[in-house]
Amino acid sequence: MSNCSQCIMKRFNALKTLTHDELERFSDHKTSLIIKKGENIMTEGNSINGLYCIQDGKCKLTKLNTNGKEQIIKFIKGGDILGHRSILSEEPVGLNATALEDMRVCFIPKGDILESIKDNPQFSLNLIKNISLQLSHANTSISQMAQKPVKDRLAETLLSLEEIFGVDNEDCIDVILTREEIANTIGTATESAIRLLSNLKKDGVIDLLGKKIKILNKNALKNISEGY
Amino acid sequence: MSNCSQCIMKRFNALKTLTHDELERFSDHKTSLIIKKGENIMTEGNSINGLYCIQDGKCKLTKLNTNGKEQIIKFIKGGDILGHRSILSEEPVGLNATALEDMRVCFIPKGDILESIKDNPQFSLNLIKNISLQLSHANTSISQMAQKPVKDRLAETLLSLEEIFGVDNEDCIDVILTREEIANTIGTATESAIRLLSNLKKDGVIDLLGKKIKILNKNALKNISEGY
DNA sequence: AAAAATAAATGATAAATGTCATAATTAGGA
DNA sequence: TCCTAATTATGACATTTATCATTTATTTTT
Image (cartoon, rainbow over all chains, first blue to last red; front, side, top):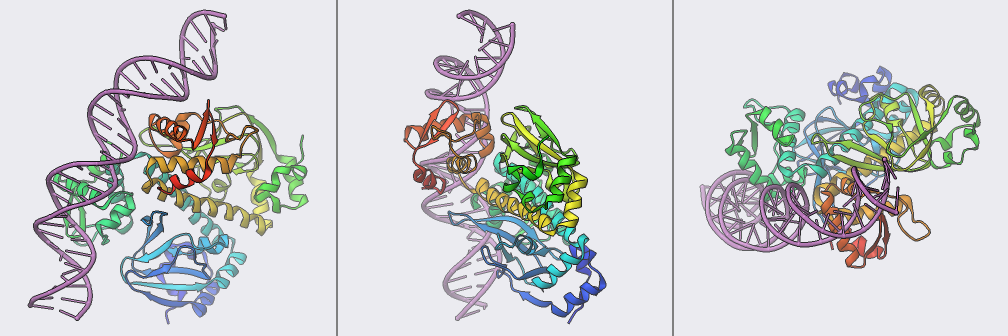
């Protein structure tokens, strides 16, 4: 079994402040999981008894609306952690984490996390900073959802997806989403998302290669996202 | 000057877990402020060097959009605290806190807060829980802004305002907001908010007495907020 | 109390977005 | 590989929401 103290993923998240001893303890107790595409790592409303550290693969964090529609709140990739909010606040998980592709994930039991929180103030602080940053992003999101038209939100989302996932060897945004998932991210009907994507393609701002999306004119997208 | 250990406001927030000694230290260093209606307690982007504890009065937390429009993210009342996110995350303030009426506010310097965070794990934990809860609410908000029509969001907002502020002796929601502020909460044009309020009145669901709003049929509002 | 400024209300219209229907394309399973 | 189901795409139309213009009411200032 792999060792936490040698894992490169810890460079990217709050775990980077842990001591060698703490990482060794994590190694001893952690379990590695394979999550298949479409499966949930966590489910809204369930309680959780540990922290997930994403080794590889991408997932979406979603919320089911009262009308049954899915809202995508955030995207997660290798190096990110999941479940710390629930551990710290001692509340059930607030969002579904659903794999967009097969994933490799490490699960570290709650006890070990709480131990490190108690012993290592810098670790706690990093977890708090992570949650604070999420809150800050969420507030920005509220504002944009409430006040920007769908077209602007789509442009914003495409830029943000490229920011998060980068591009593949053909310069396409390196994540595969259905049109419905894009619509559920920006909060619109699937048909509207499809239509607006087609328009952006017609205007030469993006290219559509099946589900893959390539940004051709980042500045134009930025302008659209700001309402110009 | 008033004394923190005797202040009833501390019952309602994370400060309730502080020891007598800690509260005495706060008392020695705190300053009391009067914030006039329309003035800011905190301003988006500014840094902050302490925590505000609201004694009395109401304020709105807002964000200025790129298009210059104000989005109201949250309402704050007596007993709430402000600024802890910024202190914990060591980042500038993310939102404007603007008084909706004259307010009495206590300011406790950052140093004292950090001291208590270090000494009193339960205090830290309560601050974290507060931020986590805000994040949870924010995620719900994103989903509703993205997917619910304006009418549903207005109904939701009216229920939530009554929840937060209660009612006065005439059963009206106990906060005075302009129609524009209501519009900026639900993310719509002022005229649309006015029109929808008029419709709700015509349907006997609410009553409008100047700026005061009285909920006549809470169940009907709840149904509307869920799309029925 | 009168005047001026601001806010609320309402109608007319335009623009944005959703819904439904249907065709074309793609992906996945037998 | 073929067949089926799902996804993507597009048109026609309905509904929602924004914008602009104007009137009425309320608040603030003089």
